[in-house]
Length: 480
Image (tube, rainbow, N blue to C red; front, top):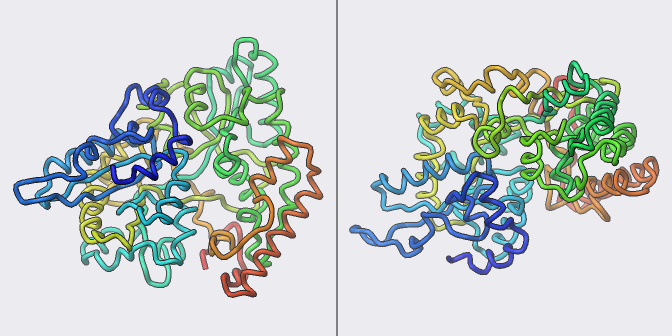
């Protein structure tokens, strides 16, 4: 394994093989790789020989467990059938994906193709790390994907870096049977109701090991970016605390929400041990009927409960994430998924594009992906031909709605490597409030000051630029 050094360093942080076997009902090739092992493609193919000579190995990294079995199957088919003398090595790095990428960039061992993830994309896009797909696309491919090319999102300065083929946002997922048992007739519309319902479930069912609420709070950023931060976008009209009309951060508007989150994560409401919970162990408990509510991404959960942790579809549903008092002053995060970036510094970038086009941009693959419940297609051609799973047909809030929108990037995302915030980031600061004794008002004021100072310094020293959108309307957001 050529990434032996990197894998050894990551081993301590990655899940054990036994845990991952439980995640999918048995060890798949991809999940074995997540534990530091090898995929079928990898085992014995670093020096693969064929009648035409040594094959070119194209390495693909993914962060997604929910579609791993489907993707592995398509990769195996490609490896068996392609006539281009290419072998694809598909590897799954789960909760340590961004860390793995950082280390691979530093060591010069970045793979050829990577599942696009916002944090890593933003961090390296201005360093020439990602290839311009326009350089390799023919006119037919450009025409096919023209509806999902968004200037200011995946097209920057005339360069196309990734192509979203499905979409996701975040929702509140709830167990219908648990609600019925405690007399809850409809899901919460406000954050106050959500806290009330969680307390009711805990008070009546905790002796049975059933609890009102859980979130994957082992990583504050992972947990909050799929939950509280999304509700705050609708509630405040700010994107991660940034006001695009004023051109400044203001985290003080998070105070009311954080007061309720402190209750939500208390023993009165929460599943024990949320502070050390990852998303898949949480999903396991939800599928077992032990958790009443949690928040996560809309594209992943149908596939999870179909394939990874089987759960009857009739037992769960989802709704918009509740806000304080039901307040809505803006749209909430929607982003494309099913996207891949190409390593521009790979010596095999042209062959990597061929692999990307033949597997991940292939219409049969995309139809199967949507029909398998792994994501909500946003491609007109796929939507017109596919027969999606019952979950996507019957659970309307799994789909992208008019409350969801592409949102512009705040400064800490727009030039991630150029804006250095002193002290803890917004997520760890929130953690000091809901799991600690930090004073809410003064802590959020300090957070606001630190982010604004870092932003102003970045503009001053040229590592960033002014981010302000004239007449910005959070209910009708524009990207530029």
